[in-house]
Length: 553
Image (cartoon, rainbow, N blue to C red; front, top):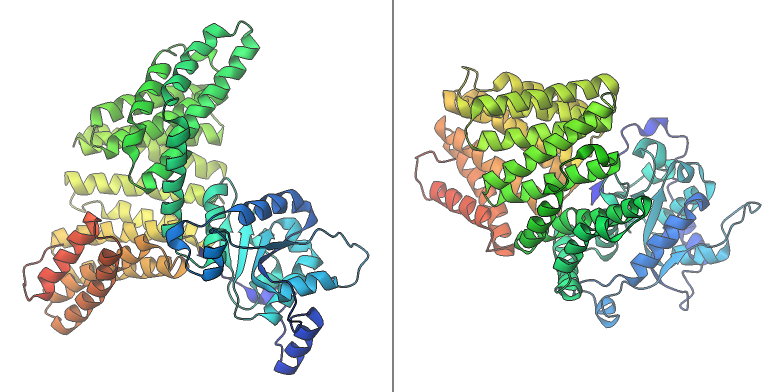
């Protein structure tokens, strides 16, 4: 769950008031909390009436959601078969009223969590502001969750939300977390459970449902894709059926794939990948396909190729990425100034380059990575203020730096490119200071920079870069404290700094950092003893703690 901080509270026109105990008691009594029969709600959903449809959908989904059995910690949830309980959503529309209705006040008094649906309309709504202010006055220690549905945070978060304690934020926009992950962040905040555990349990549950329902039909469904064009006589109807069939394939290879990836079950998708690839291999003439169909084809090929790359099957991965490259190149030729087309083709350039990098074919990889970097530069020229494009530019430099580092193609070992990557990602961080993905990538770029100094034996600069890495990853952990990936990143960074301290003879500092890292990694290993990466890091730390002086990163 993301914690959103207000970068400039002085600019806000509305400020939360400090409520003394006497005033708070009066508010509680007025709101009905002193009434022992007052209705109790697990959460109160506050929203602008412009967002009524989204609020209704979120309300229904929360009330019907069942927590996985192993996460049902409190007795009320267990007795309700994993359901969170009643959720209050104000259905009244009182444009002429001067204050909140008594039913709303009672509901706020009896709610454990406040969920604010954030949009430009919500920011302007006096009712949303009043509900936030009253809830915080009544319950200063209870969580407030912000669900972003439209607009950027600075134009969608109500001023009252940014006063006082930091709200927990979930980005339900398509370009953010997306509905599924954003919804799970809201559930995690309401139920007070770790997001990582909830995502894995939810994905596992969805997999069981999918496999139970579709176990014998996946092959038949995919076979229908190939039969569609022959079975439908009308061209328009055929195109419609084709889009539906491709949409099914895209779901299975994108959304479903993400859930399978979370629980380590990509093996389930092997046969689906192969049948889908057979279907697309038959579509040689791209000129007869709509741009939407071509875009879908490219996204699916990227997903399939990434799965092959993770399994180590580089030949199959390259075949899919090369085909995706042909698709996105065709799209770009049709509309060369369209940023979506430029972005899509840039992803193809990256993935083809990635396979060449893994094959240690440095010259071919360099050509693709330069093409990717040039595409990112074009995107910046089109939208010089967009943080997503800042990150693309940063990744462009990072890819080239990694290639120089691995190939040892220059004396700087990629340092210039790593520094450029950090600079561009830093620009994105200025726009999105609480974006965990940005902070993570900045930390990774500093780690590569540190490794370049490690190879040169420049331990002082190595330590300086590692310290910056640690700072970025600690900020990531502060934003997403329940993320096991962030915890591991911080533990690993502390270990790397300890190695440098020991090399320079700062033994006391090194021992403290090794111990700090050991505490973090040991907790993670206890949480999941099957995680090989965590177990290997724990082994390395114990090797150093035991008194060995041989440096092993």
